[in-house]
Amino acid sequence: MSTLYTTEAELRTYISDAGVNLRTEHDIISAIPAAIRYASGRILFYCGDQYTALALASSDWVAYCCLILATHHLCKNRLNPDQTASEYEEVLAELKLVKEKKYVIPGIAAGRGNSPVVSNFRVDLNRYPGVRVERPRSTGTTEGYRRRTDPGAEGINRG
Image (tube, rainbow, N blue to C red):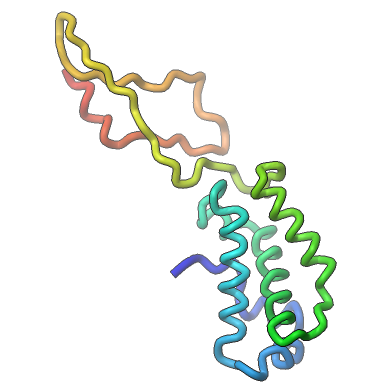
């Protein structure tokens, strides 16, 4: 199951119990979970390639965006008037900027997500032959980022 970035309680608080009931009276059981899954999926579509699901779940901004997307989905589900249309357009524009890497989500360190990490190997035939790993050379780890390493390369440099 994927991570959900808002809850039914937050949705009921945002548009009131009466507002939720009016928009879900046709399908009381599955309309709200469907709207939350839809909104969470949109968040992952726009932000999932730059941020991990755990990092996204810890952000208040992401929770707000998900809440607005879920509210919009509930409203358009039965063609009810959407009072949050301007907020929806604003949130969608910001999410598009995140997707284009022109906007950084506040409070979350950007990472490389699930990209693979590869080590460079070289064969050393000098005095003590063996396979060596060329470690990446840098001045250190940038603050707020996790350093990804190749776990298979740890035992190779033994000579």
